Length: 306
Image (tube, rainbow, N blue to C red; front, side):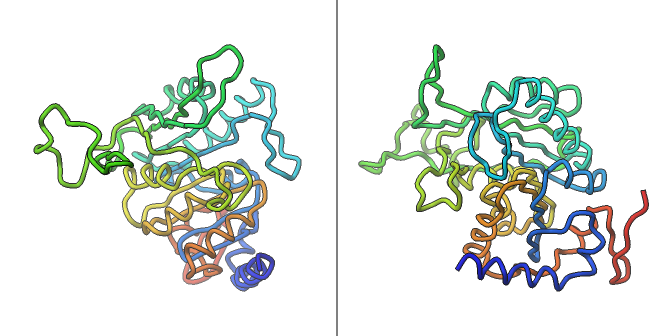
């Protein structure tokens, strides 16, 4: 079944030959909202124009020697991993619009270096701590129970949407866990303001709910980032596609998107086929195609000269 879905999607993409032929990297998948490349994110980023993306959500490999296929190394020396990280971060900063947002999800060990690097280039907004249960002790360190999500903007943010989360309740009795100091009646009817500590974000580990072998983020993580930092119609970039969760989130929230994945892309196609249903194989919208150094003029495509 997966092979058939893949063939159908590829056939539709090939039909959009004019746009594809103007790109230096052929897309793996297009939809009516976005475009995905099966390629190194650095190669894809270099084809994107300056200041054309509203939000970047990045969930890179953590350098934990996990298997990502195709001979991809996730076991680099520290200086090699950081040099690579700084390279794709510089490209992400370049493509962000003024006021655009950058989110980077990683282990605290790497986010310390990432945050220091970004402080000289962007405006710090938040270090968001996300609880990660079912983790394991590592050597002589404290039991690791959280990952981090850095939030920076290119200057002052052009939009900050306030989000609310449901009031926590006991899974056994259904009653609220906290009494809020006797001020329960003053809480907003739509829930609590989102804070920089997220307790409902353990990764998707059960195979039933995943589209690939590696752990996947809960959709709420990129979804909160996208919703707080963009408006409908804005363009979201995820340079490490993984299982395609960010693209699914963008589609269902009326955001355009651009993606890259150096490993296997079949899990992303499978996710889009399952959750999106319509628009797969269609030509991306003008707002997306205009991000690239191949531009559309009067229904014809021509390559932009450098």
